[in-house]
Amino acid sequence: MNLRLDMDVQNLETKKLRKGKNKAEEDLDSLKTNYKRLRCSIKTVGLGKTSEQRCQEIQKEKIKADDRKGNSRRPRC
Image (cartoon, rainbow, N blue to C red; front, side):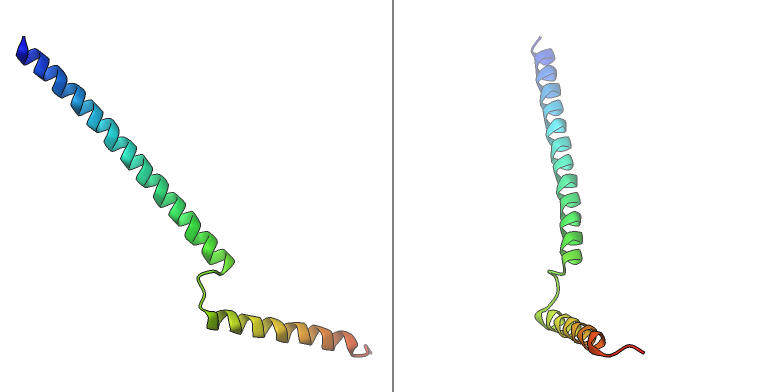
């Protein structure tokens, strides 16, 4: 009788541990997915750039804007 109860308790503990393990694995997968999305968003927005890279981009945009302004003032043939 005691042996049977011990087996039942052990089986219940095993099931509980498996459920916990599965939950932990699901949480880990979810975290990995969220991390990948975050990295992609950071890359898209440009937050992962150095200040030097941002300054270069700003200078390029200023040059483009100046060219557009200069082109609109020139008379067309």
